[in-house]
Length: 168
Image (cartoon, rainbow, N blue to C red):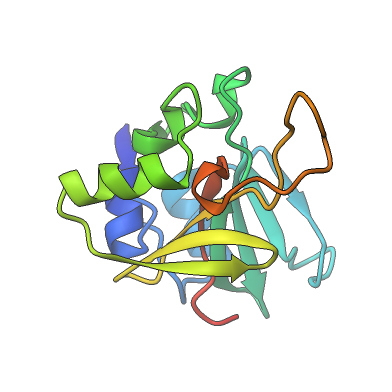
């Protein structure tokens, strides 16, 4: 059994031994049988999406094209703390509870001397892009007691997940 470090994934774009450009068969050989497969843009013989809990792998013509976990919820730790017969995940920032907001995440990255660029509108919410191209994504909206539809200040947006979509 090996450990997949989410911090290493964020720094390199590699999910343990799996990396962009590998075939689905190779990814499954390295990571083991996935928890599930869906067709998405693929075919029944060549699914476009496989997943291990909430760690998702997307394929274009059978080649790994993107990876993500955008389901970071402290009340469901099994979404980030995953273990199979082949590998286990060391969740790093995915397991911080309560979920960090954008300002807190910038501080964490700065303390760890991890360079990043802030993107204020990444598919509707802010994000931090690391030098590897991996993105730490934040909610576009969060609930406030007085007004659930109010748009919160950018720095208060909650951490959503980590994704690497280098070709999209």
